[in-house]
Image 1 (cartoon, rainbow, N blue to C red):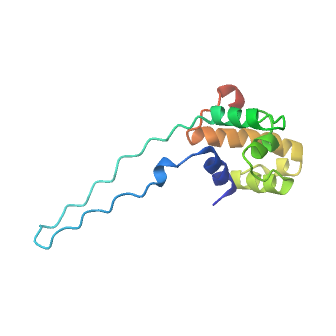
Image 2: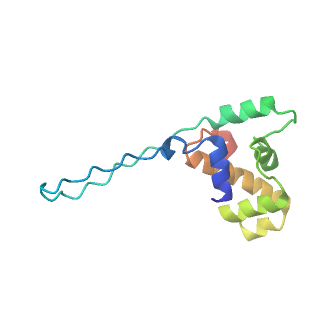
Image 3: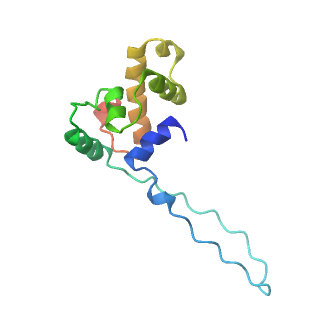
Amino acid sequence: MGFFDKILEKLGFGRSAQASPAPAPQPSPAAPPAQPAAPPPPRPIDVVDVVAQLEKLAASNPQKLNWKTSIVDLLKLLGIDSSLAARKELAAELGCPAEKMGDSAQMNMWLHKAVLKKIADNGGNIPKELLD
């Protein structure tokens, strides 16, 4: 499991998709050969109300955490390691440009935008103003 997958898991992405599918029926020995099954239609992305979840977590957190502007606060709010080493791991996983990796402030700004964009790409309701 990648670092970003931990973020999605904490936000509740993919929980409905984790139910195990029913086993396929077995053909009886006298049945004629079956035609190959058509592939299942693409499953729509589940929309997760990320903003409501994060606002609720922020309201109940004793620290004043601003997940809308800080990657450190976002990770803390989700109960995920927010150390520099962890953020560098996440930045590398998401493809942070090398020139930003050497400057923690630039990396943090890039990483915050990249994480919010990836959450939105996975069905999270991230406000447009946080993605620009």
